[in-house]
Image 1 (cartoon, rainbow, N blue to C red):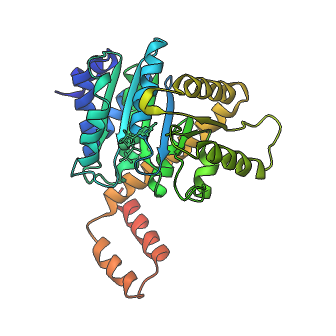
Image 2: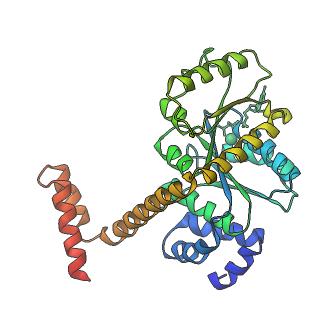
Image 3: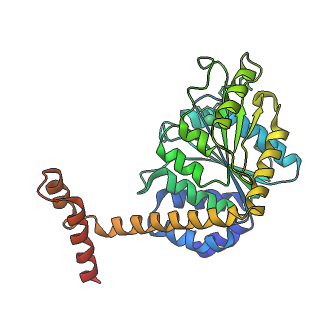
Length: 313
Ligand SMILES: Nc1nc2c(ncn2[C@@H]2O[C@H](COP(=O)(O)OP(=O)(O)OP(=O)(O)O)[C@@H](O)[C@H]2O)c(=O)[nH]1
Ligand SMILES: [Mg+2]
């Protein structure tokens, strides 16, 4: 199916066209870019919500519960589950399928697990592109699940309007497991598995940590909410907090600022991807070897490659 056929079907919310389109962006290369160029103008309306947190915190369960809550409110939901740890084994992916099965028959829900398939720029890029596709297909909320482990996941979270960080009680009875980075990116904290002992303690500690930072007037103060995702408890409050957050972004003018920052990152990433693609091969391997041997420096070599590119026209 070519893009001229794919695009109208995708825009009509056709799930098969959407699944195919995501495979195209996962694979990357010129077809991915062509598809993205065609869909980009139609995206931008969705509320993109990142859900991150340690392995096993209940992220997939929460995503399922939140999707159900949004559906009860008549909102359509696209879900992207990112599994950077095992993109090929499908272990966690299978778990997600089972967990999210209850959403299966609903035409207002689309679920996709992402693997990078070796795409240049990796999973973060493929995920960002998949979000554009879901957005252009008309899904009103797009949920991205990632394990909050590395920089790549922080990048993915940064692409979201609202970031929900999931924590659980019982991890050494304190929240030292929360990395400083997580504290900074969280717009909403969810203490999941609140059916277990210690949830209130985690809530208290999170609030204390948040108050250590100075709260500027007019800035968003992250909510700290308890949930039992397994039973859907707390979902309504979380959906409301996410909606308040995105409204705050719009009303404070931050949405426009963030959109600009995101556009700049997107452009930078695209330049890098295209430049690398054109520069690899040729003198590349030789330069790499010589930089490793300290016979060349990376900046001088980059300069040389760019000049060569310009000469090629
Ligand atoms: N007790 C309790 N268990 C929960 C709750 N929510 C999820 N779980 C369980 O926690 C386990 C992990 O849930 P997942 O939703 O797969 O967690 P995850 O964070 O998506 O896991 P990964 O994607 O593998 O990092 C499952 O056995 C869930 O049933 C909850 O509110 N209370
Ligand atoms: Mg999961």
